[in-house]
Image: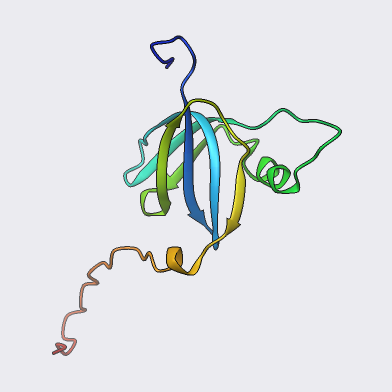
Length: 118
């Protein structure tokens, strides 16, 4: 969906995956049809150049470049921003402060006859 100016929208999606914080750019982001997931489509990668190759961007292009659609778990998404133009996708190791983010604990049902805690 284009902006009022006529330019297509670009979103920067920042999420955690396998001990890394990953930034990707996409043209479509929305609530997925799968409950608890953010749906990301039409990923945008920089123009390939034979003179300068960013190994980080190439790794992300190899991992995500063929995907038609990504379903990111809601708890893994750190931020989604609408930006003026795309930047270079990148991945970096998770900082200690970001590693403190934990999924919300779920109650696990107690089997019948199990002793109560407390």
